[in-house]
Amino acid sequence: MEEQVKRINELKDPRIIYVTDLAACSHKLRLRRIYPEITLRFEPGAILGSLIHAGVEKYLAEQGFVVEHSIEEKIKVENEEYTVKGRVDAYDPEKKIVIEIKSSRDTANKPLEHHIFQLQIYLNMLEADKGILVYITPEGFLEYGINREKINLKSLVKTLVRDEVHPRWSWECRYCVFKRLCTYAVVERQQ
Picture 1 (cartoon, one colour):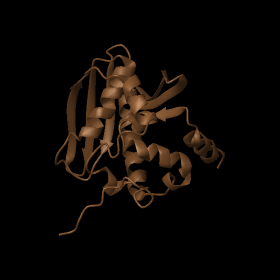
Picture 2 (cartoon, helix red, strand yellow):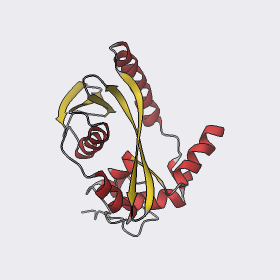
Picture 3 (cartoon, one colour):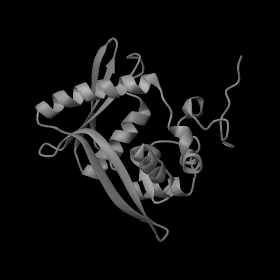
């Protein structure tokens, strides 16, 4: 319970930004800060994903990777200092390789653009040259090698703080926990 209270307080802190916030709709962050409790819900799919992560991370740790590697970077925007926080699934500091593990229902349309974007942010924060996106599905494992592309982290933070991108991805509103509260929600018309 104490950990949940700490998590809610961190979710409300306007100076803490998660890497996943940078890879999502900017208004979602604003709503999460007002209603953090909405984001804390039980989902069996998330539990399954956590179990998969734990198994793969155990294997990667045995291979010499640092797992659940926490990173953070201070970014100053408009005279305010923000802390960008993230946690990569696995990292090899010597080879400068980041591994991100994703669980999915199928292998179609992979890799997903928001997963690539999130990995690119991690690669830039760690100044790592290469990343690997690993998808674990009922059909099997998929791996995608991703080379680092320069990302302006300060610009991303500024865009997020100013709440300028909503939604970031065309499909995002469909899965957003805040869609009923959001003035920017894109409603898909049924045909």
